[in-house]
Structures are given as C-alpha cells and as structure tokens.
View 1 (cartoon, rainbow, N blue to C red):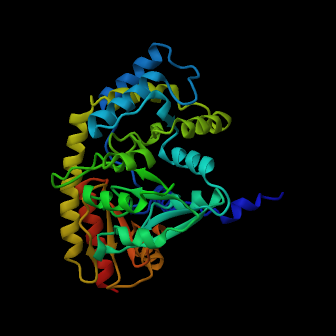
View 2 (tube, one colour):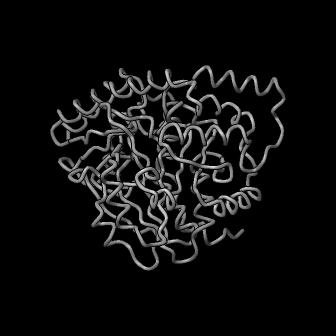
Length: 389
C-alpha cells in the first residue's frame, strides 16, 4: 500500500506523543509525573454540563447548519462585542471542531503552493505543520527570553516578501505565556498597512491573564487591523472544555467564511450539536465566576513554579503574563532539549516537552495545569536531576 506523498512532510505532534507515553508508563505502574499536556485539571463548570444535559432532553441531537446554530454564533458575537467592542455579523462566524480545525480550514482555503506564513518562534507545534500540509512555506522569526519571546515590528518588516500571505500571532502564547500589549500590536499593525497580509490571531488563552493585566485582541487596535484580522478562539482552556471540541473563527470577510463552510461541509459538517448548546452559557459569561477561581489558582501555581525554577542552578524561567506554561531556559545545563527530556523521564519519571518541538532549542515547556502538590514534587525531582548532571 502506498501512502500519499503529502504525509511525508507532516510530523506527529510531540506534545501529544509525550503525553501518551507518560500515560502508558503510568499505566504500567511506573511513578510518572506529567507536565506535558496543555489541558486544565479542572472539571467543566456545572452550568455548562447542565446546558448539555438540557440540550439532550430537549432533543437537540440532530444535524445542525455546517457553520453552527444561530444561537451559539450570536453568543460568540455578543462575547466579542462585550469583551473587545468588536462588531461581527452571523455571516462572519464559523464554529469548528476545536481551534485546530479552524486553523486547518483557514490554511486550506487561503494558502496556495509557495505562499508564505510568518510564524514567531517559539510556536505551537501545529502551526508550521498545517502550513506545510497546505503547500505553504512557514517563515520563522526567532525570539528568546531576552525579548520576552515576542517579535518586534522591525523583525516583521524584514521578514515580509511578495509571497507573504499571513502573519500568525498567538497571544497569550503556547508555549511561553508571552502576551502582546496594545502598543506592540499597534506597531505590528503599522508595518502591515498598505499590504494584503492577513493576521491570524490565535487567542485561545485570552481569559488566563495574570497580575491584573488586560488582554488586547489584535482586531481591536485599529480599523485596519480589524479588517485584516482573522480571530481564532475556543473554550478548551478558559472553561476546561478540551474534550468537547469547540472552536470558532471570526472575520469581517464573509467570503472567507463562506469558503470555509464549503470545505467543512465536505469534511466534518457541523460540530457536535450538544457541544454547541453547552457553549452558549460559557460564551454569555455564566461560568465567569468559576473561570476566575481557575485563573487565580493558575496564578498561584505560576508564582510557586517560577520562583522554584529560578532557584535551581542552570535553569531560569520567564515569568509569563498568560496561559499556563513555563518555557524554561536549560542552557546552563545543556542545549539538547530532546536528550534533557528523555533522560529526565527515564531517570526521574517527569515528563516535559522539549523546546525543539516548538522551534526553539535550549528550552523545555512545563505545564502548571495540575495541582500544586504535584508541581512541587515534579520540580523537586527536576532539581535533583539537574544537580546530578
């Protein structure tokens, strides 16, 4: 049997692979602590669960429109207006099976062979893989902790060519937790003025912000940015709905949404109907109190983890403004993140994700989306591991 050539250039997700390996080792009875998954350890809020149960009781178990039911799309519109004062219509929204699906739809609809997509590194592992699968070319802009893992307007300007189609921003970032300020987004927007380049803004972690800082959406900084920005978001991280598979895309360009509806209609059709009804109270703010409890707990864990890692000789941790990851500099120990993670898992039973998977060597990603006791024990083991090197 011959496998299609396009699969040759597609790499498996390292984060998913390490998470699966950690689960397998744990199932074998080994003492494994995994900090590899990007998944909140909290349960889905009760108001969302009850909305799902009610949807089943009410018989909302049939096919829906490919792009999603009107009520859920309207809740997305209300959310974007309430949070960012952005105006969208029903034909500006499409609901997909998670943000990853939204990304795939967008790349498939927009990118032709040789088109370039600018991606700041470190990046979420999926971005360059989907671009390559769509026959596009990922153009990587390197950053590090000395620049707070954010690109500058000058770096962006130097990366643009006549083949540039999309700038991809992820704020707050996976894997670093870096957040672009309003001023930084304004400067990026000025570089793009007069071009046809779209901004793909992945804002999945927008509700997980720390130290009282306010999140700024890319589309809200100017009218020009609003018109060129495609916002991708979902409910997986903010309200612990990872398994529900709910993502959405918003753009003031209805022709773009129309094309994605055509594609999705031939691939998956609609998102699970129960999930769509369950999403409404989350989007309308009915789970906000529970979300704030989760956010405060994440902040407490971040503070403990950053302090603890920075006390280990050879390691240093960037203090993230958002998300629930630390991107830890291991260059005082080694620059080989793959070997560091492999040895750590074998010797101490601790699973981290190598920075190489995110396009930046010399770092590892630590997810603090788990309880404080486990975090403290994991860091103790990492400290022992580093000290023995």
